[in-house]
Amino acid sequence: MQFRRKRVRGTTPKAYKEWRSGCGHYRVCWRNEIPDLGSARYYATVRCCRGNGHEFWDFAADRRPYRTLNAAKQACQNNQRAWQQFIDLADAPPKGRNDLARQQIARSVVGNKPTAGRILNACPPVWAVPKLIPSLWNLLSPDRKESHK
Figure 1 (tube, one colour):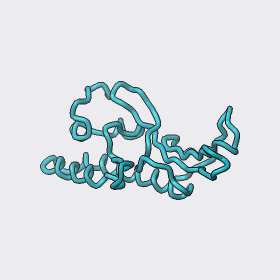
Figure 2 (cartoon, helix red, strand yellow):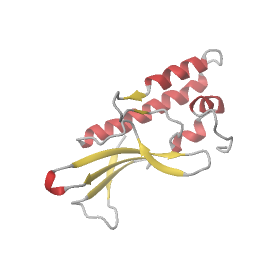
Figure 3 (cartoon, rainbow, N blue to C red):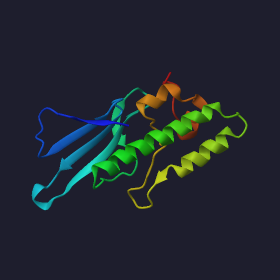
């Protein structure tokens, strides 16, 4: 996954920088919240979609900042790899598919602190929505409506 620096209007490079993936679905942000204390951090995000079509940026893996750009890029790549493996379960035989999916969901938990997050959460990335079959999506979010089609 290749990231390119994108200039954002209304911000200065001393306070905010942004890198986008080639597909445009992943973003790494750098924010310098308190310049004097050196608290600049990177945030790995992915464009997600709720059932009603609302799109938003959500954390790609851990719900925390990263110290380096490469670590944030790696989090985006891990997110993409996990979702692709989950989508590929559609080709698995129907018998036992749900068990494999539940195992992947359990393995997708990142971290063990209060900042722990799930890569395979109820709001899938925008690029994954057309590829998800309804039975897999129901495992992630059982109470969702059938409005994603």
